[in-house]
Length: 450
Image 1 (cartoon, one colour):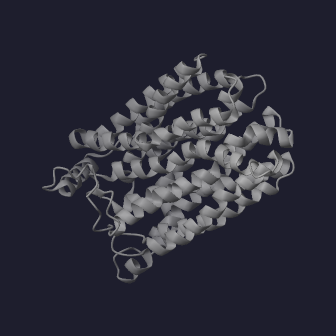
Image 2 (cartoon, rainbow, N blue to C red; image 1 turned 60 degrees about the vertical axis):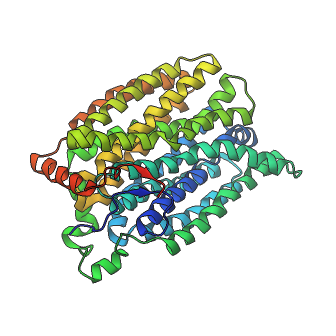
Image 3 (cartoon, rainbow, N blue to C red; image 1 turned 180 degrees about the horizontal axis):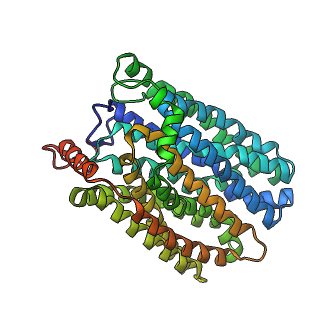
C-alpha cells in the first residue's frame, strides 16, 4: 500500500495543509537540534581553558558528539516506520533537551565527554525530517522538499556558530564569569528544544491523510509487523548494496559538514589569529550556505530526473561529490584569510548540494523500507564524521593536513555513487509517477510562495 495524496507543489507560505506543516515543522525542529547538537562548538576555546582539555581530548569529544548518532539514526529510521514521524520527533526533541541543558554540569573531561556523547542522539532528527517530507511530497518535488527541509535544518550549524558566542557574551555582560557563562549559554537551546517537541506533537500529522495509527485502522497502511515489521524493514534495506553505497557517499558529504561544524571556529581562531566572535562569524558562513545550497542539490536532482530519470539523479550526485572533494583540497591549502573564506564558500556549496542530491535518490531505493533506508544512509553521515574525527585528534597531523587528506577521501568516495543502479521496470514506473505528479502544472517542481 502506498501513501496517497502527496503534494506535488511546495507552497512555502501555506500552513493550512498537513504537507506544508510537516515541511516547516520538520526543518525547524532539525534546525533547533543542530543548535543544541553543536551549540558548544563555537565556545570550545573557552571550554578548553576552563576544563584544561588537550587537542586529543577535544578530538575525542568531537568523535563522541557524532558517534552515538550512528546507532540512534539506525533505530530512528525503523521507528518511523512503526510509530510514525510525529511521535518519533516528539520523543527525540523532549528527551534530547535534557543532556543539552545538562552539559553545564560537566566539571572534567570525562563528564564533558559523556555529555557530548548523549547530546549526539538528537542528530538522529535528520532521519525523521527526511522521512516526514518523503511521505508528504510526490516524486516530482520530493528531491527539492527533502533537500530544502534538511538544508534549512543544517542551517542551524551556521546560526549556532554566530549566535552562541553572542549569547555567551550577553551572559558575561551580566557579570557572570566565563566558566559559568558557557554553562548557562547551553541552557538556551535546551529549553527551546523541549518546547519544540510539544509543538511538533500538537501541530503535525504523520501522512497527508492522517496519522499512521488511523491509516492502519482504515486499512490504508500495512500493520508494522511480519514482513512490514521493524526487523524485516531493516533487513530489506541492509541487504541492498545500493544502500551501503549511499552510506559511503553520505559519509563523505554530511560527515564532512559535521566535521567542519565542529572544528571551523577553533580552526580560524588558531590559524588566523582572530577573536572568538570573529572566528565564529566566519565559521557560521559555512553553515549559512544551507539557506539555498542543499535546496539547489535537490532541485538539480529533480531537474536531472526530468530528462534522465533515476539515472539522471545518480549522475548529478556523482558530479556534486567530485566537485566537493576537489574544493576541499583547495580549501586546505589556503593561508590567506580572504582566500580561505572564498574557497570555503565554494566547498560549502558543493558539500551541501551533494547532501541534497543523496536524498534525492534515497526515496526511490525501497519504498516499503523507507525508514530503514533513510536511517542507514543517514547513519553514514555520522560514521564519516567519526572517521574524520580521528584525523583531527592526532597531535602529529595539523588541521590543514587533515582537511587535505579528507578531500582525497571524498574524491574516492564519489565513485560509490556510480554503484547505485535501478532496474528497467523501476525506471519506467518512476518515470510515469513523475509525469503523473507534474500533470498539467508546469511549475510543479518549483518552490512557490502561494
